[in-house]
Amino acid sequence: MDRRDFIKTAGGAFLLASSGAYAFRVLTAPSAGWMDVDFTPSGRKWGMVIDMNKCREDCTACLQACREENNVAFVNDDRYDIHWIRKARLQYKEESENPGKSVILLCNHCDNPPCAQVCPVQATYKRHDGIVIVDHHRCIGCRYCMIACPYNARYFNMKESEEWPNKDFPKRSHGVAEACNLCAHRLDAGKMPACVEACARQGCGALYVGDLNDHSSEVSRLIAKSAVKRIRPDLGTEPKVYYIGL
Amino acid sequence: MKGKPLLSPADPGQARLIVIIAVLIFVPLGFSVVSQVSRNRAESPNDFLEKPDPKYEECVRETSYMRFHHWELLRGIREEVVRYGKRSDVGLTKCSECHTSRERFCDKCHNAASLTPDCFDCHYFPK
Image (tube, rainbow over all chains, first blue to last red; front, side):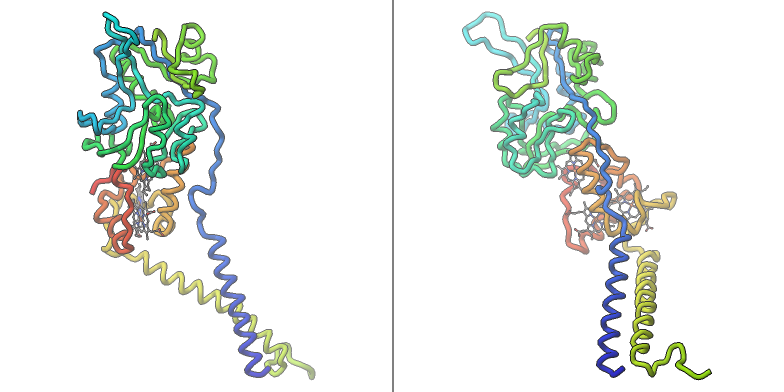
């Protein structure tokens, strides 16, 4: 074996061995945490029923509870305020003596959400259980969803909230759009949304959240037995917030 | 007994074989020794990073995995939680139970790597 042969074989063997060692390390390295998603949809469809007959006009417990639960920016300035759930007074088309009804408005979690359809980065999307949610990590703040939403339920973070009442839930920084997420983090943990709990604590119990696919749930029974209305179902958005006595 | 010895370096074919076997044995060996030494050095105590309370022995995953893969872990969990609703026992807010300070732990490394994750605009973590 001459020197040339020796160098060729030794070099070849070295390459073989080191690439083998490298491949071994790569193949046995711990895999990333997201590789083992064993995901099965729950088959649930969350919906909400609002009984306007039980809602008191002067009560804003649900609004306050929502702000505290979700760190919603609220500085009492119309330019910056964000309302995941809000109260508005209906106005009659013609002149009328009696003032209009005060109704609770929030994201309708449409089955056919226009906001999700227009989102250019799929930050807004419908979760498997029907909740329309914003992935704030993806949101680029383009505000198409605010234009698309026929219910004016979407808001833009002009100013992030100064207080941070619920440290377990993130707040939102300047430059992302947001709307009610039906307290998805609470529903996932088996709790009811903050507004529903606050309403029950007030003794009104006007808000119900439950599974529309489950025919024995409270919301399904209420929808079946009472005259429910949705806001602008003619738009084809299939809203999932039902009103009794609207 | 006359005849060829089992392995004779004089024979060019066998010399080649000896070289290949020797390299196949010693190169991976050297590789693993070097990586073991460097890993031990990295695990030896240093005061660059603040140590969590000694009552905690392990990070949420193996420490060596966390050191080089915690961003992948966080991104994976984030995807599962936000998009699929699969809640996890690990989360960005939970890091602060053990790593109590951002400035003395996370930012030490991130500054050295000139990284500025914007996570803490929204997620709570004591300074």
